Length: 247
Ligand SMILES: [Zn+2]
Ligand SMILES: [Zn+2]
Ligand SMILES: [Zn+2]
Ligand SMILES: [Zn+2]
Ligand SMILES: [Zn+2]
Ligand SMILES: [Zn+2]
Image 1 (spheres, rainbow, N blue to C red):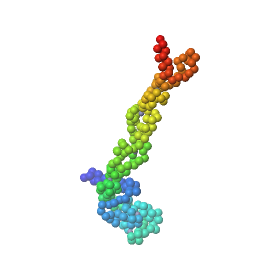
Image 2: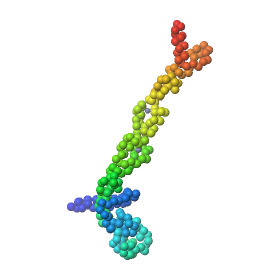
Image 3: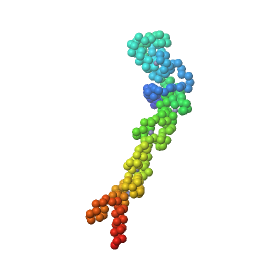
C-alpha cells in the first residue's frame, strides 16, 4: 500500500516537472482543449493558460509570468478580479491546479493532420512519436526538417546528404557529391583516353595505358640514328612493322 502510494506520488511529481518542459515545447504552438477550458485554468491577468499556476492570497490563480510581475511590484499590485492587494508572501505554487490541468485532454498540436487526443501531461511523449511532428534530418550536413512520417523517404531518396555508393568504386559519398566524384576523381570510372586513342580507360589505369597508348607522342625509334622527330607511337609501330617486314 505504502509502495503504491509512493509510486503514485512520484508519477505525479514527474508530471509536475513535465509542465516546466511543456512551457518550452508550447512556445509557437497552440493548445486546443477537447472540452471547453474552465475559467480557473486561464490567467485572469494575461488570459494565457496557467501552465505553472500560482495562487494568491485571495484564492485566484495566475500564471508564473504574471506572478513574477506582481512580485517585482513589491506588493503594490491588486488582483484584477476582486481588487484585493496581492501580497508576495501569500503566493504559492498551486500543484493541485497544475495536476488537474495536466490531466485535461487536448488535441495533438499537429492537428488536424494528427487526429490523436492526449492529456496535456502526455503531449510531450506523444510528440516524440507523432508522425506529423516536424523533425530535423539527421544526415550530416543536412538542415532540412521534415514530417516524421516522411523522414525515412527523405533520408533514403531525397536528402542531398544521403550516402550513396558509387557504382564504379563502391565507396560511399553524399548524393550531392557523387557526380563530382565520378566526374573528377573516381579511380574505377572509365574515361576517354586523354590522348584521344578512342579507348575508355579506368582512371587508375591511365598511367599504365599512357605507356602503351598509340596516340602518345614519343621519341622516334630512330632517334639514335639522328631522327629528332617526336612521333606518335602508332607511327613508330608502323615503322617497326615496316622494319620487321624488311627482314
Ligand atoms: Zn498571466
Ligand atoms: Zn483575487
Ligand atoms: Zn500527433
Ligand atoms: Zn536530409
Ligand atoms: Zn567511384
Ligand atoms: Zn590512349
